[in-house]
Structures are given as C-alpha cells and as structure tokens.
Length: 139
Image (cartoon, rainbow, N blue to C red; front, side, top):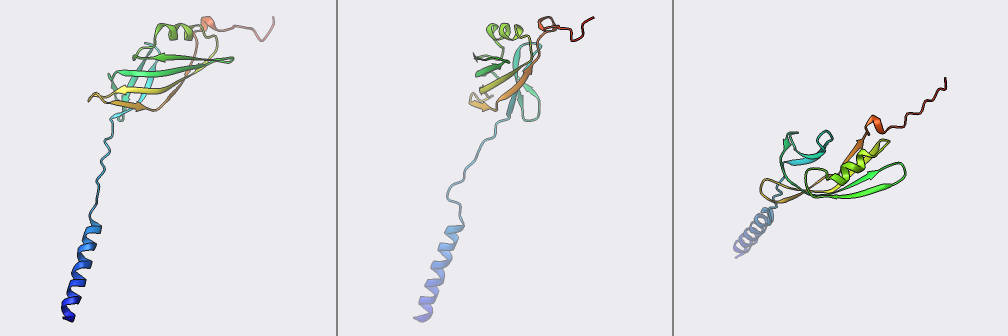
C-alpha cells in the first residue's frame, strides 16, 4: 500500500509537469514586406519600398502632409501615391527650404490588407527662381 501511494504521487507529479511544459497558445505575427515610403520629388509622388529596398507599386490609401515653413505650418490630406495639385503648387511657391512631414501613412499590401508605415520626414528645396537673391556685398 505504501508503494502504491508513492507510485500514484509520482505519476500525478509527472503528468502535471508535462502539462506545464506544453504551450497553451501559439501566437504567430505575420511580418509585412513593406518597410517605408520615400518621396520621389522629380515626379511628385510617394514610392513604397519593401524591407529589401526594392520599390513597389502598392497603392497608398491615405496620409497627412505637414509643410513646416519659417512662419507657419500647412496641413494637407493625400489619398493617392501622387501629390495633388494643391500640394505641388504650395511647395513650388516656397522661397526657402521647408520640412515635409508625411504622417499616418496607410498602404494596401499585396493581399489587400491595410498596413501602417512609419512617418517620413523630408526636406524640400525650392527652385532657384523663387530664392531671394540679396547680395551681401555692395559694390
């Protein structure tokens, strides 16, 4: 009887130990191949880049653009890969370099899922025809 009780106690402890070692929930996090967005200032559009640095043709669903000038900050809403005409005309009117902040960027991945990408901070340099050309030296 003594050995029977010892055997049952050992058996129960082995079973509870085995149950504690098993994972109860396995969580799988799917990583997106899309990593960031870059500004192509020659064509006036945003390009999605994957984690290997390759440009992709994914559709940008929405973003906010903040143009921070010396005196004020302007906010614009975008819903395509291309900058709209209002944004481009505002940027072309700038006479000094401005900071561009693209925030809340949502992109559609290859499977149709919405992916949030990190913010983009870019510097916009105006055309030289808009620059103030003041001579520092008088002749």
